Length: 147
Image 1 (cartoon, rainbow, N blue to C red):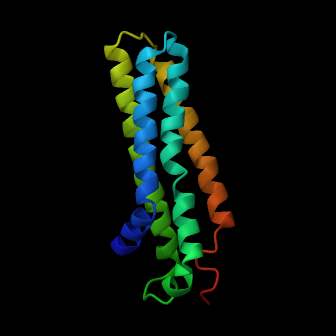
Image 2: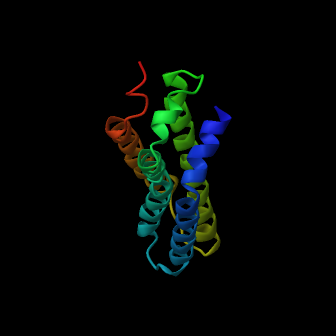
């Protein structure tokens, strides 16, 4: 299982770095925004930026035909799918952490926001991520060939 998760993260490595760069840019840009009403949307984008990378992993597996070999491993189809979901949760945690950095820096810079306003950003990001999670497996062929 650890190897499958590691494989997923390796296949997304360059895109995760790009997500960190874009997320850092959004964090810095939140310091220069005069209105604090946009900060929840920045947080939502940061959360979603990381989760969308799971599509990269699935596409890399499809192009390299890894799924054909993956299903011959001595693990169940459920564990194959579970590894993808664990990877998604790891990406989600990274996005939430970057959103937390944005909250911290915007608070230090003097933006005043209520708690419900802050939670709205995380709520929108998590909702987008949930719908993306429900969409990606339907497009994937993970374990379809294993009988």
